[in-house]
Length: 249
Image 1 (cartoon, rainbow, N blue to C red):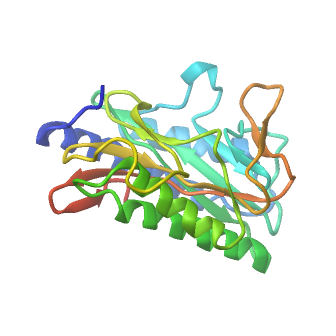
Image 2 (cartoon, rainbow, N blue to C red):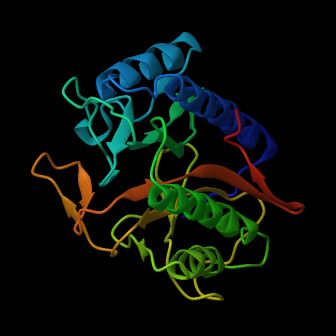
């Protein structure tokens, strides 16, 4: 069942989303050569708990980190590790959320480590544009497919691969709620959007091909092509005045 949140619930989700967004700002400070993804994760954990919230990824389905930290060809669900050391030219997706007062926030951003290639710059730019094109379609009366199609059309116009195995979702009392929000689909199809819906829209776009592989650890998702992948995500609420982004620091 898809929840339509009331004003009080939206305020609580907004509080969790603000902490989630601030956690990304913490991560940004660590995007330097020589830093391990475990160090970034530890800093995120310390920040979130300092606010009175909890990292909602930690222990979720057995996930061992407070954030998913995914480097270069890792699409999502990268496990923080002391042995994964950032180097000049890397791109690093950090997906993180906080649960506060019973409600969840969720967001992601792909950072750069120093100067990156022009190819990588364009991938990040286009993927972030995909996110905002999807958000633009999150209006009362539209359908999920309008969000999905906007993301897919923009990414594929650059020849990029849109990941199909993993999708966006509703967010609120649980980290993952109905409805699913794919990054591919046909306009005018799917669930009708209504005021009070809270959605996590999250394009996952590969430089080459849509196919992905899941590692033997059960979590780490990589591009089948070995190419770079980018990931951007906001949690938004649909209002009668249009979509409102909740995950802004």
